[in-house]
Length: 412
Image (cartoon, rainbow, N blue to C red; front, top):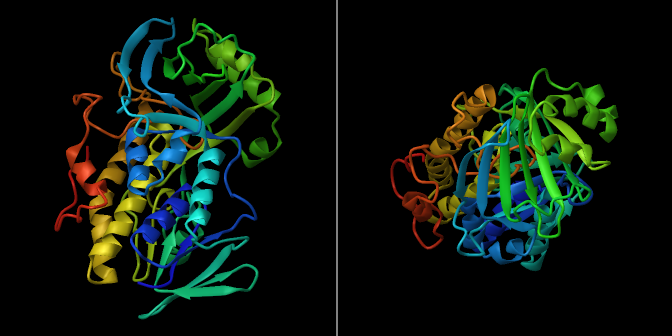
C-alpha cells in the first residue's frame, strides 16, 4: 500500500508511523502544531503492555532511558493506613518495566525515532477537510495545501479533526465527572519515600497519587469529583489559586498529600477529565481512527498512551497481513475494540464510583496518564494476579505472529 497519511504527530501518530514503516508501507505524518505538539506540563506512566508494544516497534530501548521506572504500588486510606501493596508489571526486565515520564519527553523521543528512520513528518499542517473516493482519500489543510493517499489514519487525539470529518454526526468528548490537578515539586522532603514506587491515597475528598523520582522530584496528581472547570478558569487561573482550591480537599486527611501540594509553587496545573462513549465508528472506507481519537477513556486506568501503542502495532499488522484494505480495517477493529472499550467502561465506572470497597486496589494501579490523573494498569479482572501476563495479548502484539482470523481476543 502506498501513501498512508497519519494525522497527528503525538504518541499515537508517531508510534503508528514507526509500525507502518516497519511493515514496509509508505507513510507520512502531518502535525498541526509548529513544533512537537505535545503538552509540556503533563506526565504519564507507560505500563508494561505499552512498553511491550514499543518493543515490537524496536523503540523500547530509547524510551527506557527516559523518566524513571515504577516497580511497586501502595494503596493507603485517608488515615495513612496501608490497604494494599503489590509489585507492578514485568519489573524484572528494564524494557518492560512501568516508566513514569513527561508526556513531552515521550513524544519528542518518538519523533526523533521517526526522523532517524527517514519517515517524513510535516509540522504546521492543520487538517480542515477530508474527501474519500473509491481509489484514494484527499486531505486539505488550513494553509490551503492538500495531500492524497490510499489511507488516512486519525491519530489526532480526543478532539480529533479526522473523526469530525469522517463522522460529522458522531458525539464528541464528554465530561467524565472529575477535574484533575497535577504537578511537580522538588521542595517536598521526600527522603523517606520509596523511589520507583507509587502511593495511591484514597482520600476523603480526592483520589491522590504520588511518585518520587531517583533525583528526589515528586510527581503527583489528584482527581476531584464535581462540576467541570470552565474555559475561563482553565485559561486564567494561576498555579497558586489552583493550589488553594485543591488543598481544602486534602487537609482533613492524615497523609502527605496536602504537604506535597503545598510544596508545589509553580508547576501545578488543572484540567477536566474527558472521555468518549463506547460504540462509535472507528473506520470508514479509507479512514481509520486510533488511540484517543477512537476510544479515549477517563484517566482512572491510566492506559491512554499504552492503548495507543497497542493500536499502532495491531493496525500495522492488519495492513501487512490482509489481502484488501477493507479486510485490514475490519481486522484491526475486531482485534482492538473489545479490549479498548473494556478499558473505557472500567475507567468510566471507577471515575464515577471511586470504588466503594477500599480493600481492593483495582482503581489504584500506577502513575498518571496524559493528564497526570490515571493509575496505569492494563484493564483486567481484579481476581486475576497483578503479575499475570496475558498470553493472548502477547500473541496479538508479537510482530512475527499473524493476526488470528475471526474474532479478536477476549478482553482482560
